[in-house]
Image 1 (cartoon, rainbow, N blue to C red):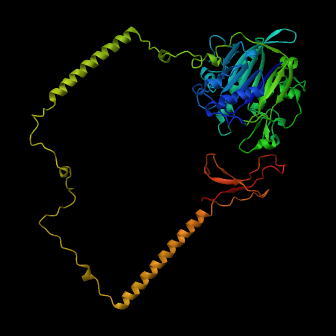
Image 2: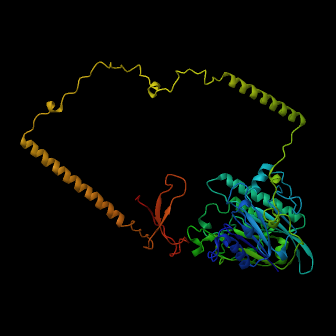
Length: 518
């Protein structure tokens, strides 16, 4: 039996639950080893690893008993990325990064690319630069003893952000490239399994709220899956595609079979999610060899759960791992890197080299002439005037021509004395003034005391009491607006219960209240 499992791990360096007590430096490596042991699969495909090559460590990439293969994002750090871990008894005969073949090595690549003339080189490079696809090719033996070739395509398909229409175009082009490559492999005689996060809920049964979604069936991603997949329950030719959704083949009417939930809203608690992760196999392979297809919602540690399948075939391991294997990376192979590896030789023609030398000689002669001229024109200390001493600070200031200057001999008249302008006050007026001043001081002291009292009352009283939601009369939870707009950064209160179906009274109510600024 051959067991394959796929899981969107949402960060391979992030420790999963239960391994936080390990050493921080070795925690991620321990977590990966534990994940592989718990999944107990011959081939484990991970998506959204969020690791680049410079951040990949040896304990994370090389796990005892497995050979691993990584595809990294070349544009952003901590983004996308896929990885495939194969047990030593399922070592692939070939491995390749990307779908277009632009990143394929000379030896050990899978090949069979199909007709990609509809794509430009720039577009192909952009589609493969986010580290979303990884191919491993294996030899398998059926129960009849026949050897076949099986190609696994580990994919993390793009998400179509509603606020960025260009990402929907990118997603559909990625789908198109994936289909071309998969069909080319089928035409070459290989069995093909596409597994991973396709980022599309195919049928209404695969989404928790498909009824309330506008134009659910008209989504471009769902139409693409319609053309790719065969519906075993329908004999119409329009539903016959080269691949089969293995889970729906075994569980065609299973409701609530979801693989992804919102971690922010706590929707997993009430199973309020969608099915975005698949194991798709070609028709012949699924019908002849698939024994089971399953979901593992009990496995925690990500906003997705693992999916997998069991095939009634045995793997024929290769004698040596393909060159893409991480153990052959220079940083892990135990070989010292030379500085010449990081330098690129600059090729110049003889005419160009001669012109560069002539230019350098002319520049050197001109520099010497300029230095000689500067030395000849520079005054010597003996030639400088002896009367040229240090200037006074006042020499840098000049009187403004707009302001008339007063003569130092003219004296300005002195202001009259205050005593001559003030009239003497009577004793009654002095008493009234004293009373008014006394009352003013008392009022100021009272106001200052009240300000201090109110300040300390606000400090010692603590934060404002959390409001209760209207549906359950339970304390709310505070959230912050992160969406760009006029309310960015504002805080609000909402029901603390997890999100769920509107008909479920135990799910979140619609309470909402803006938080007053403190």
